[in-house]
Amino acid sequence: NCINQCAAGRRHTFIDPIKGIHPMRQIWCIFPPLLTAAAAFSCTPVSLHSSRIRGSARRRRSWDESYELLLSYKEEHGHTNVPQSEKPLGAWVNSQRIEHAKYLRWIEQDDNTELPKTSMDSQRKKLLDDVDFVWDAVAHTWITRYEELCDFRQEHGHCVVPRSNGRLGAWVEKMRIEHKKYNTLLTEENPKNSKLKTILTQDRVQKLNDIDFVWNVREKQFEQNLGELRIYKEMNGHIDPRYMNGKLALWVRRMEREYRLYLQATSEEEESAVMSKERRLALESVGFCEEMFDEPRSRSTVKPRATWEERFEELKEYKRVNGDCVVPKNYGPLGSWVRSQRHLRKEQGTMGVSFEG
Image (cartoon, rainbow, N blue to C red):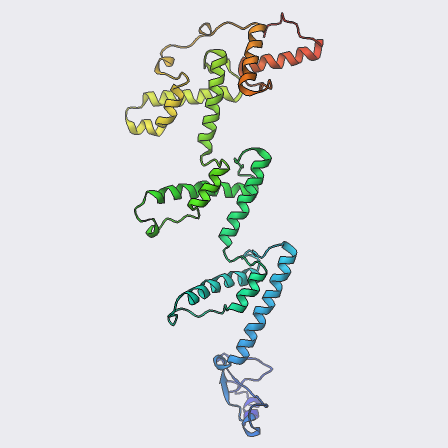
């Protein structure tokens, strides 16, 4: 009867093993070892969902095959943190993390009848643990980038990684953003219930502080420029940018513009928008004041050109402060003088004491 139906083209009641599964998701299965000879040809329909033995075997084979792929990946790359973009292994690795989270909830609770079932078990967990499977990808990435940052600091002497420095530069910038979230959560009454989330913890913040991580690059640059301006004023007796060279002169001019706007502000809101109170006090500590804009400054207010001996005394003071005589060429008059001495040494072979800087 089944053969006649199939021959007549009535395949909605019979699925040929060669042609595959009917859209109605039923097949006519024959199990000669299990059924009698009469039942073997009765073509009894069996639902796909009831075929647990075949389905379980298929899932086991799939898990084992994926596990073998993971072993090959680790042998090639040295780790098991497969990105999700690398399919199909990446998707399988991510599913193992999800199933592992379910598994942990199962073993932690006594009454787990309402918990979702999981394909993870102790045997699979042990197999994955044996190959150092990365259960928490976020924590693994954080530790990896932190170690890269430590190597960068050891090589360059600081943690100011440029954004152009690939993944590490992007990660450093992200940590600064996460730190703002972290500080915001510290001020909230119920941070656990907040919609704002961050990957930074107290321990991670402390780790970054221990290696002098720069949370605010602009403030760090301001402090460095302010320090250079202090040294310049100590050696030259003024902070007039017209007598400076290079980046320091540009920075002082920009600070003068901001300070003038601050003085012209008519409200506290305008003042804070232009310059913070801390930055204003820092600039005033090196000589910024309202009187500096009362009259145009002339060159006559600056002490006359120094002699060779005076510049030499300035160089000695520079060495006392900085530990060497490597004065940058953009370091005002002293930098220009040091550069001219090198030029004279190269041309004449000696340096006379009668030269003026």
